[in-house]
Amino acid sequence: SADVLHEDLSITGCSDSDGEKMYTLEGEELWYADFINKRGVEPQPSFIDHMTYPEGAYENAVADQQICRANLKN
Image (cartoon, one colour):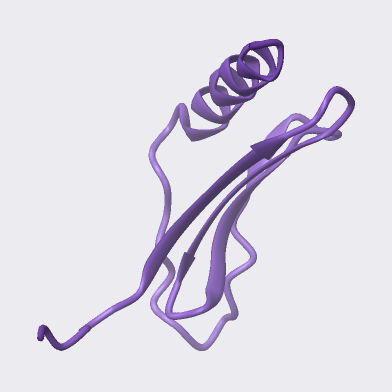
């Protein structure tokens, strides 16, 4: 068995009318796509070393939503 040092999670989900894209580390939300305001959000608390996501992360989330919705039709 392997010991787990860190737990990193990426969630992508969609429906006909809504979508979700987020990244977590150790159960804390680090980044999510705000599709209503068309931007990425980094809701990290001020007491941690801030982690930033690269430029284009929001655009990639939008592309993932398009793929997800296309897959709903299959």
